[in-house]
Amino acid sequence: DTHKSSSAMGKYVQAQRKGKSPIFKAHIRTRKGAVKLRPLDYAEKHGYIRGVIKDIIHDPGRGAPVAKIQFLNAYRYQRDNELLLCTEGMYTGQFIYCGKKATLTVGNVLPLTAVPEGTIVCNVEAKRGDRGAFARASGAFAVVVTHDEDKGTTRLRLPSGGKKTVPSNVRAQIGIVAGGGRTDKPLLKAGRAYHKYAVKRNCWPKIRGVAKNPVEHPHGGGNHQHIGMPSTVAKDRPAGRKVGLIGARRTGRLRGVKKTGQDKD
Image (cartoon, rainbow, N blue to C red; front, side):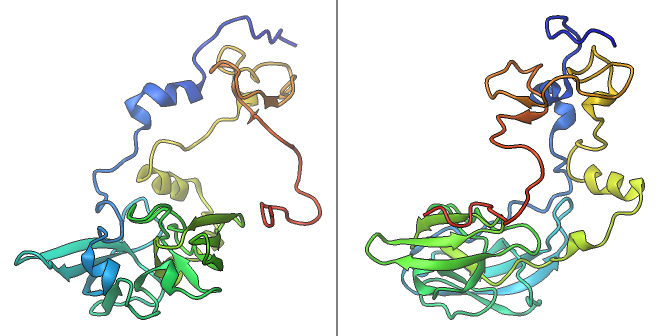
């Protein structure tokens, strides 16, 4: 076997090149714009405001469709166009209501205080007025688990299975994000994966570390493809050595019951 010494310096590892190089920037030329809830204003805090879905468009590099919604501006003679996430069941020409007094209907935007427990929501804010943070990918949804009236907080079950506590006055869309089941169909061929990632960013194809030479990767080289060192690596290792399972708490297959942060308390 070739001697894999961490002292022998080689090339920069690909993970290091990612921070600096413009090659790895996101491909945003054809993107349709930032998809957010309306900016929080008086109408949403105290009543509701009505918008109409003008168009449902495809946003390149995003698995979920996007709705172009038009609102009347409350302060000057103009119309505001907002890009919101499409929830399942939206259609063009549909009226969307945003605000505290809006009805609990799929597609509407309400503060979590107005949403009963067990409701399925998406595009939930983390802080009030940040215009959407959780459950935004296609087919994603969060479930309102409990309201804590005394503390003014709400517990959510996120798509990852973890639970999160957020302030009860944050807004969310009702329903699940459209475009679900996207990953059920296999990509089948490299060309499809190529086009999938061409509109996202340069992150495909990925070459395994063991398939490289010792000069390019800590796991490279050797007469058989083997790592030859523990695959776990500490969080504070230098950038060129920080490859593999970084700061791993546990390794191996998840066996037995699924424990993805389900019940912390």
